[in-house]
Image 1 (cartoon, rainbow, N blue to C red):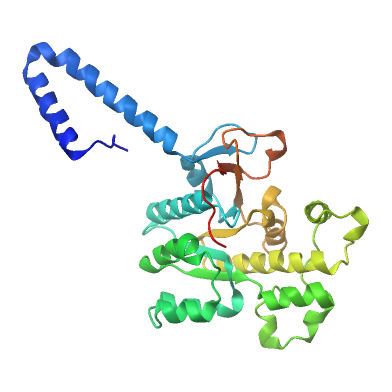
Image 2: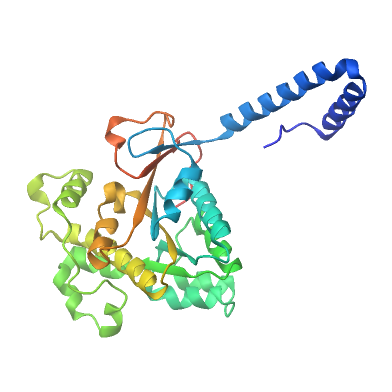
Length: 321
């Protein structure tokens, strides 16, 4: 990143430097001036960064380490907070770098919580150029912040002729489980069941159940293993995991970049642990993103919530949801 100077000042600067360098007596001063320019530029760059990356233990890390570790596995889960504009920008940067580095070598696939499995055909039609973006959006139930936060990734995939997986369970069936219990899914048609993880989908783990219970503010008894609210959440996790597993089986040797809310994969629970049930030998990493007032401070309770933990600047404007 170069120092941003007004054009007239930039021109004068280099013109002056030229005079310095042709004058042998000014070489030392010229080198000093160049050093000062680059020092100021580096400082400006560091202060512009609105996030900090740590490893699982809280040691400072960087985007290159994320990319390197993602390349070693089958899937990288990018766990976001849905209204985190800084996190969304970083997600795009990670996806873009992985696409660029694997061009002509390895297939990269984008997988999204933000689209439900029953609109996969619509997504495929758009990516192949059969329908317009207007018709795609009218038929695919995009999230409210699609244009600003997810469209850049989908368009990058479209430009590079990459697959995009509509990974999530249709919300109407998740709502059905929360109202009527998981057994109600058995009444669905065979077609509808293809939009869900195979029934009966796996139980949530005890660790995940306790975590979900704490999030909901309930007592240990309020969310038993049979609680429909917990199982509606588990349906999301299981269906996304099944979607990732199916995409990996279909595309041998590929790398999947999956976006989901941070809770779904935090501490390798939820979607990640469900994936291990469907495809035990899958190798993956979890990147957990959170916005914090002090985004340069790694706190003890953040340890191991991801293979990488990204703290973003909470003072930045939120994305529309």
